[in-house]
Each structure stands twice: as structure tokens, then as C-alpha cells.
Length: 368
Image (cartoon, rainbow, N blue to C red; front, side):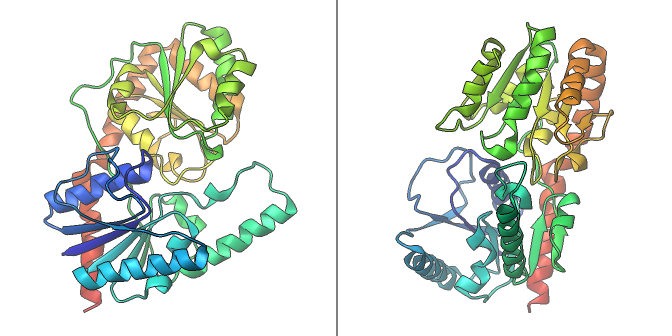
């Protein structure tokens, strides 16, 4: 089967790129797919994650105003489609144009949309003004209109189903990128979190929570791995809260596995998530996780009080208390960490990727 992925880029360090590297490589290496990937304006830029050598890349140059940009986008994609004649096309683009790709390029083959983010990703404040709320609702309606043109619209969690009023919905979670033979010993006095410094990751909430923890356990450290914003707002917030000595910020690293292995607790402070890939990665290393019960992802992954703690979204005090409980009680850390590692096995590639194969096969067979 020939599969064409359409995405903005694959050289970044985000979750979408990581997941695509796993899925596309597994489909090519293990399941014998002929996999092509269209990317925009990247040419031969080095890749952050490892992709299979069997993958075939097509770089499209798009530029100019919106009319010129979309014209380049349409011509470039259609040129590739005409050349390779894919059995199925899968779009991985969390931006607005991704919803309308079937209309932009024309729908000549079965098309799938892979939604990697919550619908709330476009919010940049906890309290929307009347105008902001109106704009948000309008954009949601526009996204739904575009989404209906796909043969399948795939979300990552059961919670995501509530965000989309569609008849073509499917749920397929993300696959793990690694499952180590030996988990973390959970001995180091380190709490870790991984993700960019955007509003949705909620690092302002995490740092305010850490202020309370630092007052009680000054020998524990918080490590934050993710692309640092130009304004360094969270670094400045840590300084304002007088916790800089116990918080370290790092840009993305390729050896994130080593960082999980050196930590003892994972903290997720997100306001919204499409899935929470970092949760299952941390669980694979046996880290108990503390997460806000944000829409939509953590609830599908964490079983509260068994392999981690789910906290009411925004309850900073309880978030702090549950991390403190894991800091104080090593036996609890170890017990929850063991359960977390068992949970992570559900997301091994050999359990997840066949679900994609089934979906692709069903769509191509129904299109004959």
C-alpha cells in the first residue's frame, strides 16, 4: 500500500514529529508500506527524531500572501499525488488549512485527518472576552465544516470525541517511542516535565505549585525540557517566585530517555492536551505522574491513585500536595511507578500501529 503523509514539517522537536517518526517508520519497516511524506519549506534540514531510511520525502516551497501560498500548496501536493498515485492520504496539520486540504487539493483518494491537539489549543488565556469567545466559536464551526470532508477524522482519546460533532470519528492513541528494559530507580530528588513553553502547557501553574513544594523540600529539583520562548517568561517567573535555585530550564534534547531515567516524578501542568505523549513516555520509565485533569488526554492515560494523580484542572494547591505526597513516600512512588510502567505497555507500537493498518485497509477497500 502506498501512503502519503502531508504535514508542515518533520524536523522539529514536538510531539507531532515524534509520533510521525514512529508511525511512518513502523509502517514502512515492519508492515511493508510504501510511505511518502510531503513537508513544506524544509529542503534538507536535519531531523530531530530518527525516521526510517525507507521513507520518501517531497519538499514543497510555499510562500507569499495567502492566495499565493495556497496556490503553491495545491500545485505542489497535486504534483506529488499525480506522480505517486497513493492508495490513501493522511494529513497531519493542526493548523486551520489542514481542515480544508481535501477542498484545496481536490479529493481523488481516501483521506484521513490526524488530530494531534485539543480544540482548545487556540486559546491563549484562561478567561475569554466576549469577542474572543465569539471568535473561538466561529473558528470551531469553520474547523467542523472542513473536517466533514475527510473519510476519517482520527483523534487520540475518548475525551477528544466530545470536542467534534462528526460522524467520521475514530480514536487511535499515540504509540510509545521507547520502552526501556530497566525503569528509573526513583531515587533522585528530581521532578521532570517536558513540553514547549506555550500557554497551553501551563508552566506558570507548575511554577506556582513548585513554590509551595520548594518551601518544604528545598533539596528537590524541577527540570523543564522544551523549547524556551523568546521572552523567557517562565524563567523570569521562577526568578520572581525566588525558586530559580531549584528549577532548571533546558531546550529539547534528543536523549530525553536519559532524563526520564534520572527523575522520580513526572508533572503535567497543561491547560489542554491532545493526548499527552510525555505521560506514557514517563510511565514507560516507571515514573508516577501528577497531572491536571485537563481536556483531553490525561484522564484516558492516568488511573487516579493507581499509577498517578489526576487533579482538578487549575487546582494548584492540590497539585502541590500530591507531588509532595510522592516526595515524602518512596514506597508510594515505587508502587505507583510499577503500575505506571504496566499501563505504558498498552501503547507499544505493535499494539497501536495495526489499528492504523486496519483503518487504512477499510478505507481503501470501501473506495474500490
